Length: 312
Image (cartoon, rainbow, N blue to C red):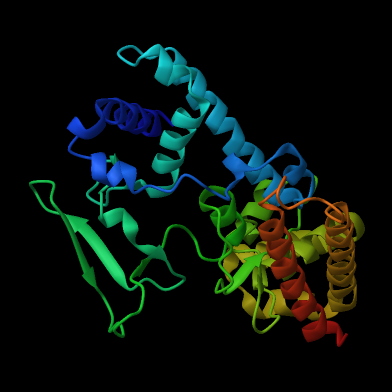
């Protein structure tokens, strides 16, 4: 977070210079309205499913911590420090437009004009810095005239993070985290692949990643057959795919039942969350429509999985 703080500080210093800043035109072109978690109302948080709510609360916490840091920063005017709109504006610029340099320096950088690229599940552009610190961007595929130039802001299989940080719903995301949250994630589960970028439901096909099946099997065996759980881990660690698949086939009625229960339970939660928004004024909570679109995107993915494996 310290890297972001220094950029926020720089933005505010340049803003105070007004038209004397060489970055005045760029700063003046920045949006003032955002739909990300840092801009949501408290009520909006109550309409978010668990993972999205957790991500949103983390983003809000970062905003508050940056505000406290700015309040104790020298060289800024008291007027700037007291202006919630101004330091929030600087925070939003940094957290939605800064990216880590790929030169091994660990630097976090904003490149005016270079920060105008859109996000895409598949990038059209790569960028790099030369020895003098100049920023170079070039296309890596043929791009039709009139099409946007896109880079990847973050993992495209994590649309919830993209929404929380950047404030948009990427419906081109090929998959989303399955939303399975065990009470405790132990070392075995990590070795089996418990991670948000691996425990995936695929949007267009309804397929479930192998890691999801492995975790479901591990959970079932933990409560029913510890000996077979040990065999599962031994087969996994040895790369014995045949033995591992034999266990999956043997316990498929149990793991598929766990999957079906999870799908239905989570979709019921989404229905309840959607009901909270009924009758709410979108002028008072302007991010609600996007939140509901996010929830519906997740719901459609879950429905696709249920239809793929259970036929309804």
